[in-house]
Image (tube, rainbow, N blue to C red; front, side, top):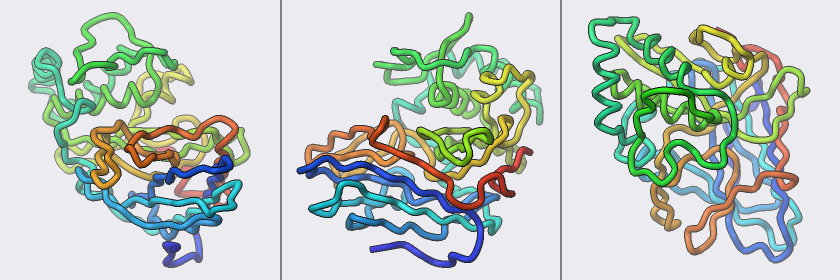
Length: 296
């Protein structure tokens, strides 16, 4: 089964997953989401059978791929068009999850910080989150083992794009600002259309104004203050999925963090990343073309 519509323009991304002999698990894969820059046009799968299932909290459709019996790799070919659209409404809807539940002291501090801020409330929250993080990949994340997002009251915390944006979405929502978490691939300008893993960013909507935020890239580049827009670090990105705290009941998966890269799912519901040498990601068409390289 392949998912295809119009294949006339836009961008193409190829994801290749190596398959070990005797592999019995399925691959869970995102299908792409609509944004003001892109429309997912199709997904073609080689050396695997694609079926569809649904994420329970957001209603997003996802692919479930069973590798062919003799496959040494499964290849996913995504197509994206440049047809402007809107972010899905479900992106901005909060649902109860340990990845989005806000601690009481964080809620109180955020509400106080943005009181009477008006339209500047979004920028104030973003600046406050930016001041709380240094970019990195800690062995223990700031919210590991917790049932809610804690208040980072002082000092700085090491965090990746995942950690920073988990906190940013929680703070924006605590301030009464609609916000959502987007996952996808970012292809740096200097990498000739390749990347090694997923990236994520945040979309806010306040008084009808939609803005995108990438604090992690500002931190990596040493840029301050944080300004709204995609690709503060030059490159291209495509959006694949949204939200945190995902559930796939038919697969026995409940309140998992996110979905971006393909992940293996066993019959017991256990999920494991591919990563490392088992995964290659390449933008085969549209690299550094607009709107995928948009910077504002």
